[in-house]
Image (cartoon, rainbow, N blue to C red; front, side, top):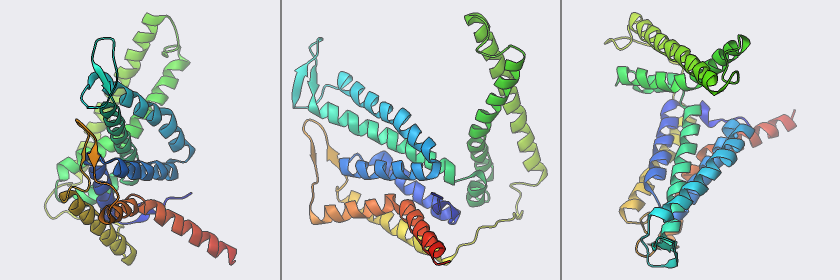
Length: 296
């Protein structure tokens, strides 16, 4: 499935991720967390396909379980004692649930950031913030761009070293360590040189100078305005719900949170629509495309 949300204006993409990542970091309400991780899970699969599914199941799911299991071993607050550990500390239900919620929050934020890195490319980021904070936007775009470049470059270096017998798979433990350090040294040297060359190149082009213009192919169309207004409206609505403690949960000493009143259900629906906007857009465009194909 081809993602269509990435084709929207950069301000639409950035505003969306600012809301969903911010809400995922600060809302520990279990229903909000389930909606957020569901949206992040589905959208990451749309963006990355089988690789995204593998990443979520093989890496994120074990992390969620591990972090959730570790918390009750160190956090002994809570009124519902399930049993006592060998050291005499209580193992409470509240600490277990809080650990699962905290781990869910961590995994959700990582998933959303993986989607963010896929959608918000360096040229989009510079387009948005190049005139406001030119130096910082250049540094951030370089950092985001270097992550996939480092991964590809270190594979290239490792393969080159493997041809001459200096890979981390050759020799004993000491030799493997020396080979690994050598590969890391080559990688670090390349990264520093590449950073300097990029900075000098941007400086030579007058990046950050007052009055400098730059080509941009981004245009705010009607569909962008509609989706932008929808995202901002839903974001403001959810913020308003949080001011009335609809997103607040108390985990200690007992668990207490707002339930399923009418206003609560409306807030859940609003948050669901916000988190699944990219999924709705992509699904709609796929159905529309298949319909048009069937008419040919």
